[in-house]
Length: 70
Image (cartoon, rainbow, N blue to C red; front, side, top):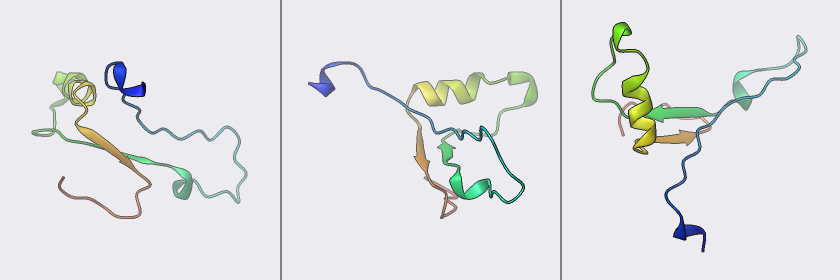
């Protein structure tokens, strides 16, 4: 029944509500890899990245491994 609706996409985000000086930030954050044809120019805004996210051209990982191409 879960597949009856349209596709569902969820991007990762990190919540750091309170941090003490001893806390490490990066081990607790997830990474979003977004597939783009090229790096957008500044004057293009967020449109190319948002279009890729809407199309599902991304994946989420905890970032232990750097993925150069997917």
